Length: 272
Image (cartoon, rainbow, N blue to C red; front, side, top):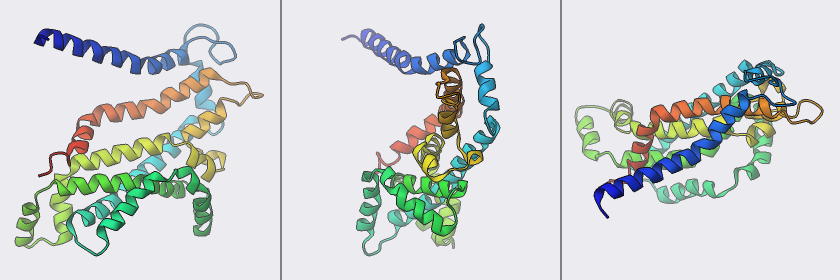
């Protein structure tokens, strides 16, 4: 096969897949402004469905703030714990290290919905039930196995000579980690941060179970409640508008950070 034919086939396939994956999102955006019966946008194209979303119950701003607060807190907790855990697994030798690491990864095989009831009871004992901080801690728990694994391979990909040189100059372990190693593994940090943000922003089950007050609901739960607010009738227009609002931050972040996201996943592939 000639180079030109191969290139044409590649771009044709890539273009077809792009259209296939983007079509649902484009259709959602179209449906959110298109006229439809039983919605707030019945005459011509407009933003009536977004008005319904904006004015629903506690208000769109409140739900956006709740989701942003939980997501940012989840990212902060996940990064802090995974940096410490990943660095310890990568650079320190201690009894049971590999067994502990395998046990950490084994959490990925447990459906997280099965842990919600004991976590619900535990949060009640800690006084964190029905709070956004408690929800962020639970979401952090779900992200830690992947995050620790990601940070371990990121740290292992950095030559040890860099740390040894810094220690010879008088830097301690904490100084090496914060002043040198974090800058060397920033693609891994971005990958962990982006992955945990997307997971926390879009999670529905944990907020539904752990948070019962309406003014503390996150955006996915608010949209689920909105879609059946009128005598059980589904407001598809407002639901589509909510999906667009939910998707936009994820799309923007991924578009801005995708290059670093890919580099983070590849950080351990060329080790050695």
